[in-house]
Image 1 (cartoon, rainbow over the protein chains, first blue to last red):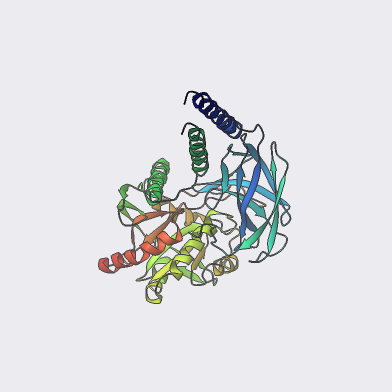
Image 2 (image 1 turned 90 degrees about the horizontal axis):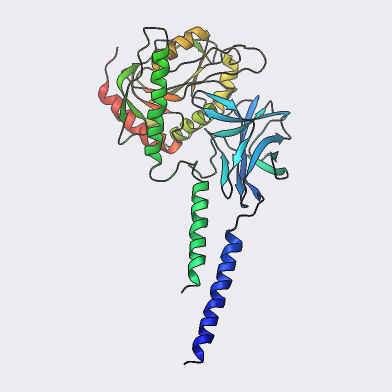
Length: 154
Length: 247
């Protein structure tokens, strides 16, 4: 009994130390953003002159970032907008929260694609390049979805 | 036992950061209430805007409060359906009241170059109508009144509406007339400073359901979902049949 006690205490101390180290390394935020773009789509536009793109930017790093612009292969002119009541306002950049997500969705933020150079039908794809303040640009292929499409099916 | 704790705490932290990241999204059981509150807030703004107008004949829209069983916001003074004749998508004159006589009429002010809110609103209404029985569907009219008559010709509107539901009624015409019809409904439209090249246009932030009595007793903000509309439309139809009468 007297010989086993120090061993047990040492064992517990090691386990606690290892656990604390593991917790410390994984909970300490990394100083860099680690971005992913998910759920990008373009609803089939009802107008031949304007379309919108939606997506979600996820930061799995600990620093967050800023979306500074979105380019597309179907429109020379693209603008980031936020819908506000009766109109929409152009936004220069939008924050991606650290370990959080930035959601572009109907009625909120959207990318306006002006005068698409080709007609967009479900099954087609649009290439979007998202530019950030700190991270390298991310390019995604956004499918054209039916009018009224919602990623969560609502 | 001691060793487990840091991991548990870590998991909780991660859960919360994930949950807060989704904070912008309105979902879950409180969503309807949140939307109604947002609607009431939007109406507050509406009331202010209407009150700021210099035309004495535009009554402010007064909110009576959220409705327990509907996704719209009840208003204390019903809004009168405008007696408005504009140009229809066919190019012929169409009177709003006559074209929709006896039907529950959902009126929305918007424009076809609108990338987000206007097509979303029309798509959600179309999706809701597809969920109804044909007999119910036949008793509902959807009217899109353009706030951009410079670009929205009858032909443009016809093609745009066909993307959602070809039975939707589209109206265009003189901007001053459209603006004057919108104003007493609490919809303050601003004339664009320029109407050449790319220009900004304002749209309605709400859909107004006018009953067979040519009155709207509630207002729906543009963010109401297709599912919410599908749930409410049969109830609105029941309300409008019991009311009857004409003005």
